[in-house]
Length: 196
Image 1 (cartoon, rainbow, N blue to C red):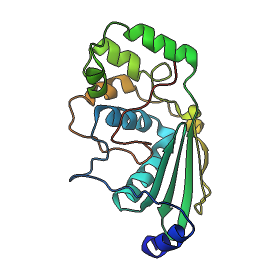
Image 2: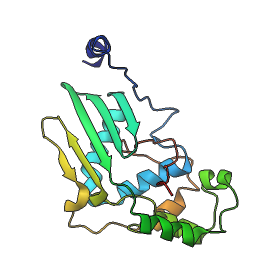
Image 3: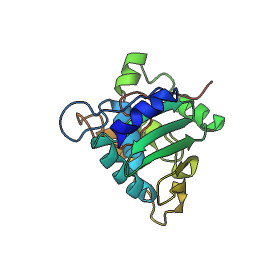
């Protein structure tokens, strides 16, 4: 289906950016920040069904277009038809950003160390803590899909409490890759901090 649709979409002027998993194995995220992003999302029971389905589509080469813009990720996924997916992430509230910056001030030696995730456990705890760290909670993520089940909503409907991501995030430093998630806007790059 995707092969037959690509020429039509290109004729319509749509430039497609397909996603291909790199390397071998099941890893979708290969950087510290990509793994930490995936760990955060996987910590929320309300998102698990969508994440599992997204991983399957991504590993199967069915994500034929992925566009990442500030606060929004859109994708075209080839299934029994071509489905449009939009994921929106609310900007981080300024007080939360300032609290993270204050907690980490003077504890990160360089941008290189920050990007590689090389900093002490206290910084890790602040950066990855659910609700007060850098990563969004399900209520800060909305999604919609033109797929048959009409997926819409935010992940806040869960009755199960999230597992702690502080320890999961810390473990991303020692793993070479995580099983990842297709919902990650940039599974192999760093999350962009909000404007100062």
